[in-house]
Length: 57
Image (spheres, one colour):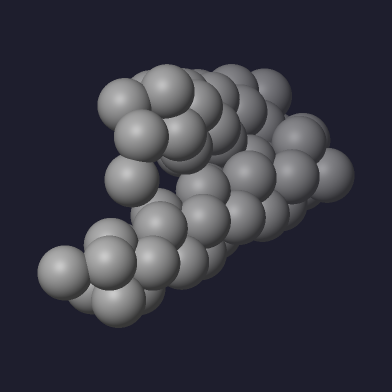
């Protein structure tokens, strides 16, 4: 997994966590759900990169 991919995935997770928090604080369910989706997307990308790394070894 490249460092750039790791960083991009982590940024997506953090951005999602932030959106979820703002959505929760402002009672904006749409933004809260969007944040959760961004976090999940980042998690899945991280998992995919880990699988790639496992096959490279």
